[in-house]
Length: 404
Image 1 (cartoon, rainbow, N blue to C red):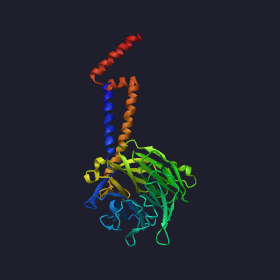
Image 2 (spheres, rainbow, N blue to C red):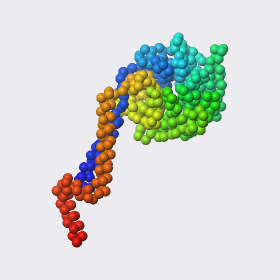
Image 3 (tube, rainbow, N blue to C red):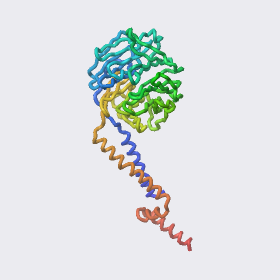
Image 4 (cartoon, rainbow, N blue to C red):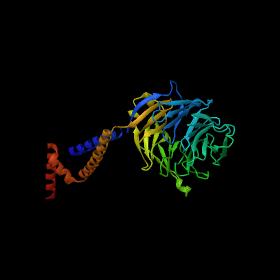
């Protein structure tokens, strides 16, 4: 290989490696952090109200705490008299109440007005089932509750102070891992670790639409008009589900595997608009843009210096701004994140503008050089070393003798 070729290839490799290093920098920086307790709380998740001013965290031994979403150091611990583990929660679209579900048929109702927490349904009526997922429908008229045994109940408050309950006919054998309902389209999406992905329509009709064979870990329907929900499975799998009330067949999920992230996906939460954050293990966050159907590094594991975060599991996030918010971990740590400085962002964008075209140009130059003997000879005459010039002269002399 000629000296010039080696130089071009070496330059190309340096540009590509440097570009990869720059692009790997996290989009956000960690700020304030604190712990909710001196002990391991065993949290399972977080729920944010529609006004984005109140967050609920919940988990092992019936633990529930209400946090100010902007200043989470302001908080109220809730006691409801039970010790059953709590697995999921969802705020009513009105934002004033929330349902929290857990073991042995536990369904709790939290009310912001008087900071109360009490049972919303009879555990006997719910067959003492292990309730692991919950979602309010778009109108807030019914809540859907999913069980570990593959059952879905729809429920609402009854006149006698209890709950009106109806079981959906879904023919499931796997756990109803997660569910979420769209903000404006009257449809909800359900994930099961056996049957895959299902749709609940406006009239409570249920249909499985695909996605079998994956271990789904979370689902998110974004705010706004975007007619999609997104589900994630542990092995870097993302599914887009289009919501079309006129044609349930259009809701067959489009499934892709993210190739460039060596993580397992453990959950997904809304960030802003049609952007969502995927939590992973080892601990990191990936931004997924639903409109673009593309994913980007958000918080790199290599950029997490705090061992309380890097060695823990993220169980939820919530947004406090366009590129800012809070992370909640299983043990009960809270970490603030916010966007990197505009100067760093501008430098990164400038580097992308320069480096990617430069790398492309070097690739084209290498291909032209290797494909054209005339270009190679001209380059050696102008830029080659003495040995290469002597070798070129001998080859040309030999070619002239051969042509006589």
